[in-house]
Each structure stands twice: as C-alpha cells, then as structure tokens.
Amino acid sequence: MSQYDYDLFVIGGGSGGVRSARVAGSLGKKVAIAEEYRFGGTCVIRGCVPKKLFVYASQYHEHFEDAAGYGWTVGESTFDWPSLIAAKDKEIDRLEGLYRKGLENAGVEIIESRAELTGPNSVRLLKSGKEVTAERIVVAVGGAPNPHAALPGYEHCISSNEAFHLEKLPRSILIAGGGYIAVEFANIFHGLGVQTTLIYRGAEILSRFDQDMRRGLHEAMEAKGITILCHDHIQKVEKSAAGSLDVETMNNGRIVVEQVMLALGRDPNTTGLGLEAAGVETNERGAIVVDKYSRTNVPSIFALGDVTDRVQLTPVAIHEAMCFIETEYKNNPTSPDHDLIATAVFSQPEIGTVGLSEEAAAKKFEEVEVYRAQFRPMKATLSGRAEKMIMKLIVNAADRKVVGAHILGHDAGEMAQLLGITLKAGCTKDHFDRTMAVHPTAAEELVTMYNPSYRIRNGERV
Image (cartoon, rainbow, N blue to C red):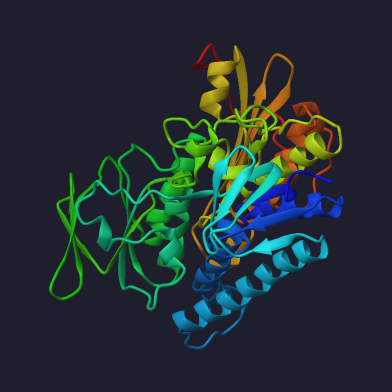
C-alpha cells in the first residue's frame, strides 16, 4: 500500500494540468486535480476559445459589405453585445463540462479548491484546510495578466480577462501593448464598432514576428480605421466625473476613452503557491525553473505550461503534459520539443508563422534566400476590398532547407499548421518546387515562387 494519499496530485485545471491528470488516471494511477476557478484554464475559459469566437463575431460587418460585390443585398444589420456574451458563455460552459467529464471517466478526483504546496509531497486544500500527500505533484497553474500596478490609475483599466465579461460594449477603447493579445483585441473591438486606439512603446507591433508580417498588419489595421501609436505609452489614467477615462500619454497628449485595456504581458501565476515551503526554485519573473523533463529542483514536483514561462501556448502545455506521462509513467524519458512551433495571430488579416523570421535567419546563416509574394486575394476582386496577402519563405542557401514560413491574410493560421509539419520534416525548397499547386487558392503561392525575391549574404541584402 502506498504511503501517499495519491500517486499524482495536479494543481491547476488548465490544458496541461487536465491532460496530465486525465491520462495518468486512465493508466490506473490514483489522481486528484485541484482548481480554484473553472476547469479548462485560460485558453478555454478566458483566452483562445472565447477570443476566437469574438474574432468571428467581429468579422461579420465586413462579410456583409463584401456580399454586395457577389450579388447579395443585405439589409440593415445591428449588433447586440449581450447576445454574443450569452452565446459565448453557453459554449464555454459546454466545453468545461467536457473537461470535467473526461476527468471523471478517467477516475480522477476533482477538487474545487485552491491548493498550495506545503512540502515536497504535500498539499493543503484551502477550502477545507485539509492536507493531502502525493508521490508526484504537478504544478500547472498557468499565468495571469500583468496588472501594471506601477501605472497611476491602473485600477480603472481592464485586462483581457475582464474583456470577456463587459456588461456593455464601450464606444471607444485604448489598448496598451503590442503583442498578439493587444493586436487581436484591437481588431475585435474595431470590428464590433468600437473606436479603437492601440498604443505601444516599441517601434512596431508584434516584436518577435517577421518584419513584413508586422508592417503589413500595421498598414492593414490603419487602413481599417484603427489608430496605432508607436513609440508611446500611458503615463496616467484618471476617471472623470462623467465616467470616461482621461489618459495621459508620453507623446500624444491626452486621450479620452470609455475603456482602457492593458495587454502588457502575462506573469507566471506563482504568488502564494507555497513554492518556498516546498523548496521549489523560481526565476526573477516568478516562473518555476524546470529541467528538460519538466522536473523542478525538487524531484517529486513537476511544472507544466505557462507557469514555467517557456513557451506560452496551449498546445505546448498539452505536449509537455504528454512528455511528463511518457517519462514518469511509461518508462520512456521524453523531453518537450519546443523547436519550430507554428503559431497564429488572429488579427484581421491573420498572421500564420513557423520558423525563423528573415531577420533571425540573416543572423544565423551565411546566406539566405527570401521568396516573397504580395497579391490581392481572389475573394477581394469582386468585393472591391483593398487588401493584400503576403507569403514568404526563408531558405538557408547552403542546404536549401526552408527555415521559416510566414503568411499574412485569410486563413493564415490554418496554413501555418500544415507548414509546421513541412518544416518539422526538414523539407527543402526543392520539395516545395516539386509540389503541385492547388488552383485557385492563395496557398498555391507557396509552391509557385521559383526564384528568390532577394538574397541576404553575411547580414546584407544583395
């Protein structure tokens, strides 16, 4: 008989935590999982899933406009924010139910309580005060929006969490940040009819993305009517007697809006988790430090997902959970593979990307070939919409391997998933050239760019 109450105790009911608990339970292990809010984590409850639903909702005004070019007459349209919120909440409830059902079917004990570490093999459940023990503990509590508490008036602002639960749609909003969350919400609010301004202290939005993607999206957003203020940041937020927010910026003076959203990064959610009591090491950002097998410096405690601040993406947390299972319960040591992760920004237009940007490749390789196509998508020809797609392949000239692929345009995220397989397989530009095009599609450009647009040699464009 085990000396512990559980074989595995998981703290955090998000994607990584649920996957590790459910699979361990299905293998016959005695497992419990504790969650203080809702099962599904950031992604399902207040992240990727509701955000994508909002993206869909925000696109319909353009769909209605485009329909006229194809012979459709669309009558007067109106948007009802409470109806969207209600429909979104219903879907999130359904998904949370599926997460719970999966755990129950695997025999996992579900504990609705905050859980904190008290030692290398012990956890306290705050709701009951009970302390339980486990042979292994997985910490998968994710991250939380940085409240930017040093900003005077930050308490008047919202984060992406609150954006999903606003009682009414604001008439105007100022969004601070230049990452994918800020960019996506700027497009969402604008699409729903909100006067939208994005403010970012950097020189260009989406700092880690390829320059063509960044610049192309910036231009497209401004063409839609979104105001983007780079090289600027908020200095103070005050609430007026009328209820509006007076925002003082460094370079653009005073801006008055109904809502301010801070999208200034996310922090590992480790405060008050009992890591010190268990002896678990964290870094300067509060992230849990782990080895290549997601094990902390305490051999019995593991950490997965955003709480480790490795790669903050839901599929990465799930992948790390499966590697944990392989390593600890299947005698097959497996470390997570964080190389060549395809990702998407669900802006309007979308960005889909995998591998190195042109700038990163130029620093890494002696000579780089860049294949670039910019064109008007077929759908825009009859609608009359002035939009462009950009497709770009980055090739290491020495071995012809495609080391980066970047797309700006409709369904870019869908294409990025398939390109992720291609680059992961180590395909060369010759493989692309030998692949027959699917016509007429936008994606055919990926296999019909036979000659490089330009080369970069020793960091210099030639």
